[in-house]
Structure formats: structure tokens, C-alpha cells
Amino acid sequence: MKVSELAKLIEAQDLTPGVKEDREVSCGYTCDLLSWVMAHGCEGMAWVTVQTHMNVVAVAALAEMACVILPENIDMPQAILDKAAEEELRVLKSPLSAYTICGRMMEKGVPDKAE
Image (tube, rainbow, N blue to C red; front, side, top):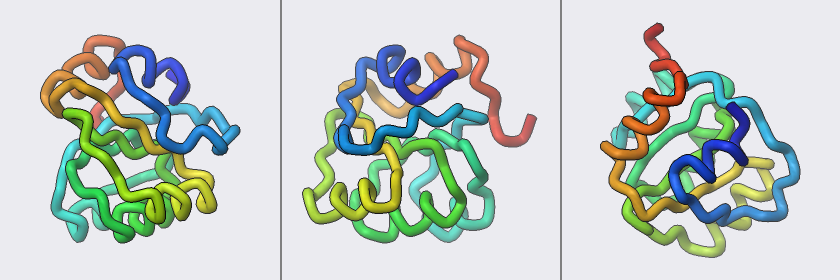
């Protein structure tokens, strides 16, 4: 599944529309503890988090994730979004809960990283 397809699935708004690359989503993950995500993140991951600070971009870029997803219409500061765009990282904002986002991803066959 591509990030653009995932965005439709989870009713998300693309907060970094300048990022042209439509990466393939290899797996899904939900966690708000950055050190844990640093240890377990991977390339192509769609990461659901409520965190909105600069370190989110750093962790996601380091792992070469496909996108970061903010649930429940959480906003991310523009300076952070600008950095995400600079790193070619897509940031999506969904009105859905993290639970529902992950459920929809699993329903459509997006695997858990552990699989």
C-alpha cells in the first residue's frame, strides 16, 4: 500500500503536500516512547504517534519511515512540518483514533513489524 492509499483509508490530511514521493508502506507501528521507536523503527513504516516535536521527525527520518500519522486531528507545529518536508517525510493527520487507524491498516493487510 502506498502512503496516498493509506491516507484515503484513514481519512487523513497530508500535512506535508510538498513531499512528492509516494512511498510504499511496509508495516504499521504505534508507540509514543521515542527511544522505543528508535530501537524498533524500520524503513517503510507507517508510525502512529501523538508526539509532535522535532524528535519525531528525526527518529522517522533516521529509520527511513514512509510516514508519521497523527491521530485525533492532532496538529503539528509548522516549523516541524517544514523540517519533515525537508527530510522528504510525509506527515498525515487523521480524525480517527490510533486504535481505529491501526485496525484499518491491519484489515487491509498492512503487517505489524513483528511479522
